[in-house]
Length: 112
Image (cartoon, rainbow, N blue to C red; front, side):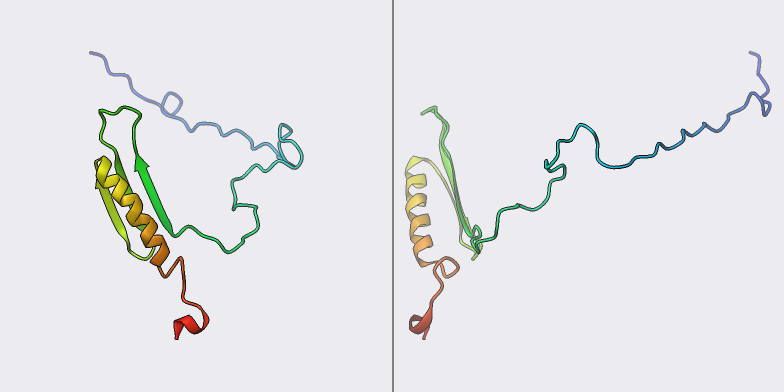
C-alpha cells in the first residue's frame, strides 16, 4: 500500500464562487396583475368567523362505520361512532348552535 503525500497544490482547495447575477424587476414569466405570493385573503372582512364545526365521515360503503366530530370555540366537543350516534350528534350540534353564546350573544334588554 502506497501513501501519497499531499502538497498544497494537490490538496483540497476552496471552491470558486459564482458571481451573483444582477436581478432587476419581476420575472418575465409572471403576467401583469397576477399575485405571486400567498398573502391574506383579499376579500373584505365582513365580521364573520367560524365558531362551530361539524365533520362527518361517511364512506360510500355500507360496511364501513361512519363517524362524526362536533366542536366549538366555546369548548363544546363531542365525537360519535356509528350510524345512530352520528345522527344524534347532528341533532346535538344543531341544538348547540341554537344556544351557544358565541353564536347567539345576548343583546339589549335580553342580557339584563
